[in-house]
Amino acid sequence: MSSPTIRDLAWLKSIPQSSAVLRASPSVQARVAAELPFPKISCFADIPAATSALIVAGGGRLMDEAKHFRARRRPALGLILVPSIWGSGAESSPIAVLNREGGKEIAVGGEFLPDAVVYWPELLATVSPARARYACGDSWSHALEAFLSPLACDSLRGELATLIREMLRLPLDADPRWFQASARANAFQAKASVGLVHGIAHVLEHPLRAQYPEQEWGHARLCSVFLLPVMNLNRAASPKWAEVAHQHAIDEDAVWRILQRLFEPEAFAAALPLLRENWMKILRDPCTRTNGALIRARYLEEIERQVAA
Amino acid sequence: MTNTEKLKDLVVDVFLIDPKEFRVDLKREEIETWDSLGVVSLAVGVQETFGHHFTQDEAMGIAGVRDIIKILEARGISFDE
Image (cartoon, rainbow over all chains, first blue to last red):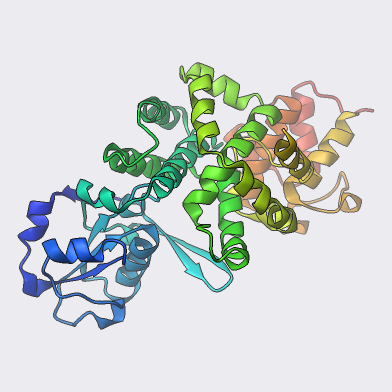
């Protein structure tokens, strides 16, 4: 499975306008359309038969839909992804996470990798500080859960430790270095799997959005909010974190300072009733089952106690 | 808590079964959640509970609870309680 080629904006602008179409998320549409005068589409089914490349600029959800569409409906179409924010790592991952009626559908395979990725740092001007923090939390959850995963081999854990040390030096805001760090975290988690944070995020995203439609309850925010409680649980339930962090010279205090800055106590408390209601479903989620520590049914009480703490 | 009780707790938690369903002669094919991810969770739980890290061959060869006991007894963990 090869990685997508990383290209720059000049390369993207050199593509003949007649050979490609563009779809962009509303948040970046004006900016992208001003710089890239390709014919615009609002639905993948509208792509003309003669088109040879699809350019998609936006967040993880739109990029994953594009990957799935290309793989299933137009495999000969070139796919170029321009992420508007980091975190999901969708632009470099062979995984397509799709929002479907009642939950997430996850498809995995080399056919979901795009042909090229263009990092466009100026698009970060569209990202709010809160969304930037959630995206950082998403990347941190990929890196830490992959680092602890029972499916991570020693060499992969070593690469993840290097990445974690680099991430500790990045601010929790819109810094273009997050694009590459996030892509690496995502590539590693694709090899090692993730854990309970992702089990919670996959199960709770739909019910939380339904219950609080006015709030931004997306995957990245869920990862940000639950990373500290889950890592506290991992640290209490198993000696594994302490062992591998020590073995790979990870500064545990520095990691916990990041987790505390990502944590939102009010959001955590608001999500708890749905966590209780869906706990058995979360325990059955494939991500939860590859958590670094065994997640037992009674651990729900441990997580709940953290509200008081 | 005896080692048998610890193992029962572990099997119940890993495979999300009712404690009443637990038997020493319980077989893998009787439990729907005893799939490949179940084996991964079981290995994590055995390491946390009994301090033994399954080898790949051991993990692949487990066909039921009795096999887990055999592996752990071979490591000096007694279930003669």
